[in-house]
Length: 145
Image (tube, rainbow, N blue to C red; front, side, top):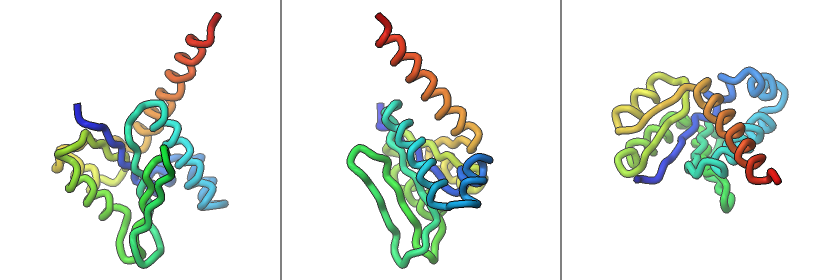
């Protein structure tokens, strides 16, 4: 079975989830950090590699990758996160099992055209919540006397 990857359109998620949208309106960095933390927990619990992509402001593509953490890309100021997601799916879609989490229809169609799957931001929220509940149940079961 090929390795599984979840590519997340960061701003699509932030603007799609009311709690993150409110946080973003007050503090953009805090909203990003909360999303990063949730996705890191998901990666740790599921074994699925997570790649998070944000629109950036710099002159070159930025990348953040803590050991054992999720991989994070920030686009250049003259490009969008969408273009990075499209490039990743086009390059790796046939080699890995890829799912793109976004509410952007064009990106969803790109994922399909390169043998990937997609989920919208509500489906991602459900996936993360279900994985957290399943992990908590398993932990409770293992710790039971």
